[in-house]
Image (cartoon, rainbow, N blue to C red; front, side):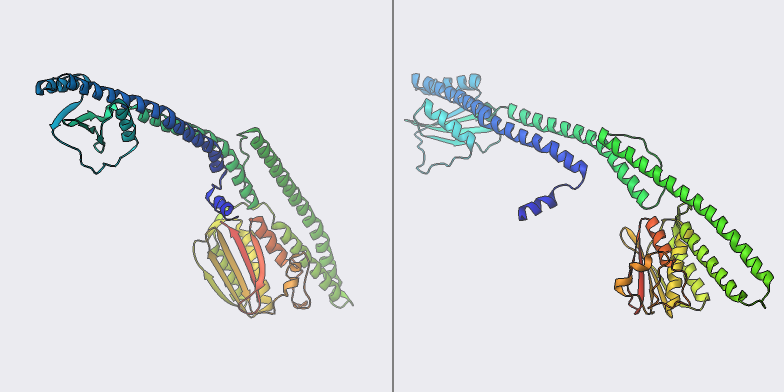
Length: 439
């Protein structure tokens, strides 16, 4: 479980990263296996053959020295070795190896030592610490033969060439794969951005279908869904415009008829109060419907809206404290957002004596909190108050309350901007309405 959690944190989170990992992992595994086979088979074979060739040249030189053991014969043998084998030799007459063995320095030395032992049964000291030369000391009966051979005789450049070819081809294939995968992922990102914008209530223009057939199918379904939503909203707006006209006309006639009756007729005042209540309900319903109207988005500084709403509440005699921090500019429907905040502030001022409005910017959200010191709303009833025409008579004054659409309109506006609204306990002792809008 621990290893699985570590792997989950280390693995890439994006589709592009995971796709490239699926492509690159087999490629790296193939390169590792190929390199292992190459170094275990080809490199060993080549190294052994080169070492045997050098050992044969050394043995041939020693044979020439034996045929003519005089100083002139040794000199001739050394000149022959330098001219034909590219080896420099020196004979140290009477020299004897020390008893302390010289440790091997690597794989190349072991291969060369085995090749020399196969050619001549003599004590041998090797030193390949120099980058360009290999030092070979061979104990002969009358002294020590010191040989300096170029290291390139024991090493082939095909090793570097093979490794460079593997790395280069892998880099090219990786670049090609990344380019193709980026083109495949780009339509998915565009679709995700369009869906996010639609969820925030922003305008989403129709975009060209691109990518694989599955991505094109998802994009086509998204376009159909967007068109259906826009058609539904347009039809709803047109219907509400007709409802507004149809309801306002009989109410106006009723108000005119009541005015003509005069104030002395019994029951006229009660009828007038009923008509005014009906008019308030119609206005509240139409305000609720306008929350999903066709107002365009514009970049607005929420600080201005908060200050305007707070100033209006102060003019009505409410004690209002306002705090606005950070960059609060984001695309919203200005009048709808103003109506939302005004409804919440009016609701808080109606049931409390003090109201506090706080607007802050987090990493990717803007939060607006409206606190009051009123009686609050029980936690089990906070979901119910968002329903249209719903009111809590136990905690709210029925005589001073509205028609029960203030919180509904606020939630409708916030959701239309892709945000969330929560009701919580306020530090002032009453109710807190928290609005969270995506940036």
